[in-house]
Length: 157
Image 1 (cartoon, rainbow, N blue to C red):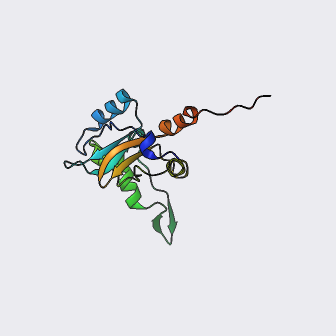
Image 2 (tube, one colour; image 1 turned 90 degrees about the horizontal axis):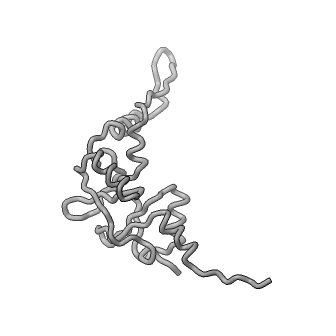
Image 3 (cartoon, rainbow, N blue to C red; image 1 turned 135 degrees about the horizontal axis):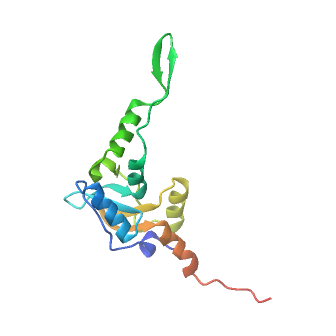
């Protein structure tokens, strides 16, 4: 049974929370990766920055829907959620745009669990950690490669 350690990329490109958004975008594009683990000064995983976190910056600021009841305005959207979206849209550093405390897998996580997380939770990139250190990263492409890597027995007709 294949495990995360069998398919992960071991030479992980990481960025720090204070990396400028423009530089992070350049790395994502130049290295052709979907996500970058964000690590602190001690090398501990603190977040992940994915292409979708940067694409959100092209979004317009969300205007909350409201309805009136007895001449009062009642928002239909949480103000906390709106604040968080505005913060991501206006982010200048990775810390403001990243997803903090990302879902991770361990080196011995079976590929079926990795695939389940990717499909069910719509994750494209999963950091592989041991303790609090990033030891690898698994992307959808890594999982797809397993489909063509295993020889299949073909029945003779």
